[in-house]
Length: 291
Length: 291
Image 1: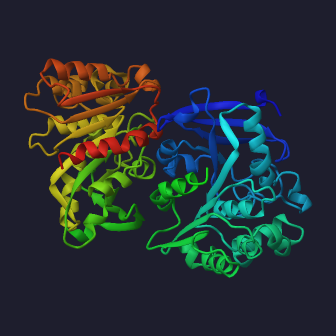
Image 2: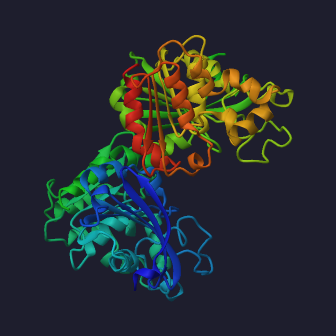
Image 3: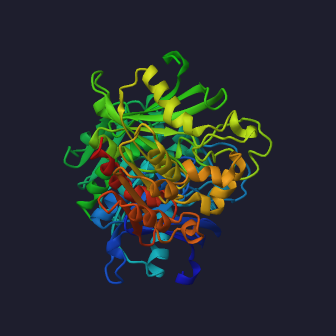
């Protein structure tokens, strides 16, 4: 992987820093073109400093653009000197039969796992894409990011991704995790069951080992740094897709108290980016403590 | 105009306040359905207080949603206790031949004027819609807005709208005006010339009297409160569509010094909502001084 492989699509100044959009051929996604956005705060633009990286994983139907356009992360990230990485949510154009049939499976719905169902295993490897390939690409390109300091957050499906990638990391890749309206216990909700049945040979049983935040936190012994916000007006919460109470109970049962795991119920907020933008600074500032 | 005429389409909690989307049959727009968004900060939700109103006019191709979704106004507006009104940018579905042919004329491009060309005069009356009809509707609906305290701002075409509605008001309806990347001298730029030739019987000559901020400020004797930001990386600025220097010169020549008219050149920023979001708090705080 060399720097020339990265194609710079655009550079946009925002909040004193730069938002850059790149494209590259992703080996993890089976050789397909994949885009990402990366925000470099002003502290990273002096040609000397490197800044830590906060990875934002977006939700179902989103791309690398939604968080950049609507979440309101840039002002607090500039204030704290933190870079932001916005990956896409799935491979694009794999051409697998049925991948565009539903909004909650396939394109735009990669669930941040590595598929084991042979039908999807060549392309649907967002876990490797986010945790391994994008850091390699960023490092090889010489971007002013200190990859030894990473944290991760996300929204909905991306909140699931942030919590599971954080908790399942064998190398403690991320120093902290936070999530807006995350899918906290996907083996027990329709979205998760559908995704795991499709992507994984072992279905929800396979998923429980590695891809379910509630299951993962049950077995977590080391201390953690986790913040979760969800809105009580969120229809997906009401429908039982998010199940934050399950995650909170599992965290407490396994000895992670409020200093390690905060799950905050925010009265009246829904599932949208209006909710995210309201608490954007809270989350960036939470991660800044550890970065 | 009675309150029942307003149809509430959605209510979304954001930054401690409420974003409400309404629909109504707009007499000013020839009886067509028109939408607007209004943000009520927490200070307006106690059933007692009324808050001042800051009107945001969006640019070409936008709707009532762009500013709400991307501009980042809610956190500073909540902090200052200011309501925000987001009108649409034109009538929708008038059915006039050619109105959907171009992105910079017709639908999505109302230019905040009242058309005098008979072809458009029934529907294209965004001036009356913004200055008279929407305040009437808001007042009749009993929304907690103090209509005696209004200011106005906008982006690009909407910056043109904000500056001209402020400067041309015979009743000093707005206490202050600000703009991001405004079209400052539309009689001298292609966008403005095309719009005025289409909407106005008298074309740019008619426009110069009432719809050109640079012309208006030349004849302005009373003090003004105006803030303008534009980006030096803005391609429309480079192409001569915005002409902020013309506005600044006219303001200074007519005796409005820096305490009255600020025109700030922001290095490297483009024409997008990333630019707006960067300076969103600056603009809301500017207006808060007068509201």
